[in-house]
Picture (cartoon, rainbow, N blue to C red):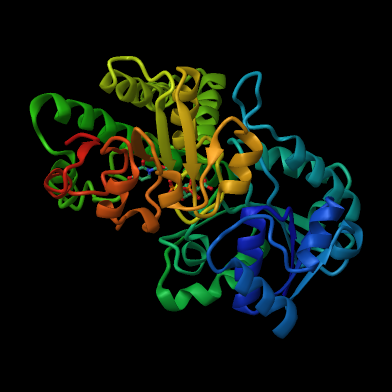
Length: 434
Ligand code: UGA
């Protein structure tokens, strides 16, 4: 089977390489020549564990993958084409920007010469896949193509594993031929007994948004409970554990912290609410989650300022962690960076460090200073803020750090450290919900 992935972002690259790993021939298409050139040299546009190795394996050893900027040629032999381009939030109304998705659909419609299954993997609002079908129908006979919705559930930082061992595969398809193709593409997962949900286009699209919004809701819920814990002397980690042991609740996504960030939850929660509004439904829970999460990093920055009697002018903060989560260099909607910028605006100085996201942050946050490692970053600072739970920050040499800092204060926004241990070592330890 020949597959074409249009869009070489994180979803396209990971999904395409994993299909190559399953044994299929995959052509990656991107209109950005520079990106294709770099990929050809083995230079990945993002950091994702295992990505370089998987790419090199299929480029050099198995030769299962090809790169191209020519969609016409690539589609001539394709059994399935996946649309994996971005759907960022539109600035004006927070809706998903579907310009790229529709442009690719147009291009596909000009280039289908034999039967081809068009699969939408980009996260798109309900109704988009059907619109894509209409776009293609204008140029191509119905017998020559089908449209499917096959949303992705890949977490940055563990995306390859999430693809190879998913909890489920969601397929929105309304033709037997298309269903057969998608089922054979995912056949390698049968051995793991991965559940496959076959449904219509709208349902598949909605499952994606409802899943992300529900996970986001879990996070905001536990963050609100964490705030209450601080007032009443309870411990959020024990609360999460106690709740999570109930199988109906489950312990995942109950880690309190500075709120959710990244390229998916913030934009998907907003787009989900907008879709509902257009259909005269108010998703009041989703709206509250969005509002609460937007404020959360700002409130935490205020909390830090309050600790210093609302005067952080000229105080130096070491900001450890800039990516929105560990194991990625993605800084989109990073709560850590939002907090850093809030403090900066109040007159503080920020010295930042991240194992992988330094380059991205340096470009976007030139007012931060940057350290070369944790210890260099913490030199002479008035407080340390742990913003992202990178493994490298979990076992810091706190005795050594004590000799470097001006003041022994740690704002542990990811609850990495044991409070008593830090107190015994002479640190003032401010964490979340404890
Ligand atoms: C998320 C979903 O988990 C994926 O299933 C989905 O495919 C992806 O969005 C997408 O739509 O493409 P991702 O954004 O990579 O994946 O990362 P998550 O691990 O879900 O974390 C999202 C945010 O929530 C991070 O800022 C993280 O720090 C925060 N979080 C997560 C918490 O604050 N507490 C938790 O318990 C879990």
